[in-house]
Image 1 (cartoon, one colour):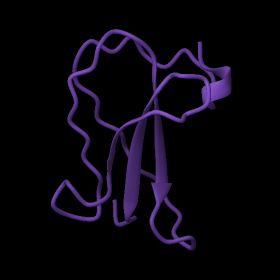
Image 2: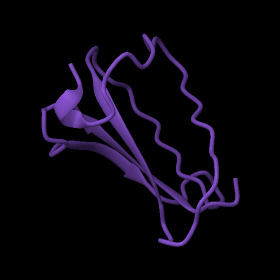
Image 3: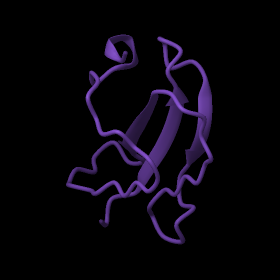
Length: 79
């Protein structure tokens, strides 16, 4: 993607107040990269663009024992 993305990983504390990790250009380009060993639980990944005028599509690559996205799209809806 040519979009300058920022990724923020939150612990599911109900309000997205606890940041586990955040990155802007750590993948060696305009893309974020978050590498974390996480305890079992639910986490929320926020992806946003660095420039307010940027739009487009992107892909998230996840490795590990993820169960899939079966939660709401906000921290308050996550279970």
